[in-house]
Image 1 (cartoon, rainbow, N blue to C red):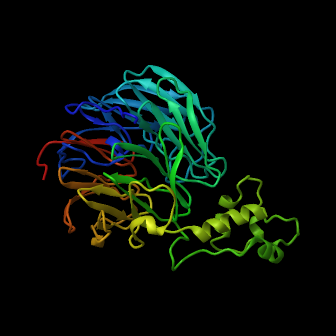
Image 2 (cartoon, rainbow, N blue to C red):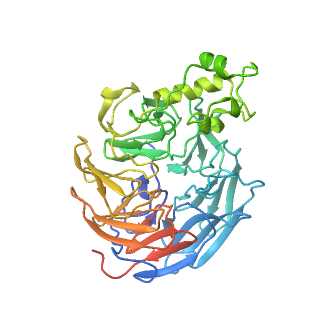
Image 3 (spheres, rainbow, N blue to C red):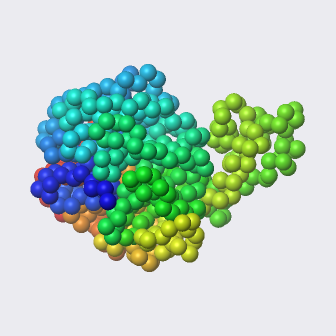
Length: 465
């Protein structure tokens, strides 16, 4: 069994995306319920642009940013927001991203000895907590049209990276002491994905659960051996799994995976006869009729030659045919190829797009874009409430965290919503930050750290309920 490095119980730590073990649970934290630019504000600082979330180790806070020229790792004093150090990654070319994306989107992780920052445009750089470079491992930029989003995680002395892309996808493990490759698993059936891996600890065992296009797979941490796989997820992975004990939860949604609005493609042989006007056995974008298939031309053109071959067409057709949207739970212990009968439950209504689910105290919480919250029984899937409006519209790219019996989640419109944790919806506060929230917040002690637009806020003090 791999031992995961953590701070002592008395120490303060939020060491990776969604905190300890990636669960989104801020144990012992008591941040305020009501806060804003002029309320319960501890400090605020301007940052270079970025969508990465803050991570914390004791008195230091880490995140990444892009100032238009350099990709940077920043270290701030957690109590004051003062910049202690900032270091640039030696990237020679910065990858393109979606208009809402950023080349500094993956959240760094920290183990008490080093901070590890991953940039798709460069690779991984490890620094000591005082800012000295420990090692750098350049990696080819993933071929992902909208940029790299997956955050690295720690599994003992291994740094785990998922590098799914339109071709040559892989799961990679690096030694934390040297940056050298420990193992890699090629994932040829996977296309672009924006999800992060999750280290599931249960029953004295550990497994790395990795989402992707159509599939959810589990791997043994030490050598990358596949433990189980489930085919029945969305065409593109955009959320990260979570667990409570021996129950794993995953939510996936993407266009074309709902039963009432599926996108279908005819076999290549038939379609090319009808639409390959110059009979060169390849399709230009103009040869494909306008509609949802043509709109995904760049996703089909895997080799980026400006045309779609019959093989590329068939790959996309298979993905649309097999894609399935839903939020579901799996109980620990499964092995091999799983089917629907291996799921504890599945719901296909009110699905989040990018916001990852939260599992805590036997309940599962999700937030659908538009501000629609749902809550399920972890073991049965029974809905305590579903599609309930929280009064804060907009898309939700931030994932929920829970602290002191309250759920915190931010919207792209800049509203941080606070809900009372429970089996009925109760909105405690809607806190307008005035800037879009794309990153997941962090909670440590009495403080809540929220990245909104070009500002990092620290809220603390006042009432907590």
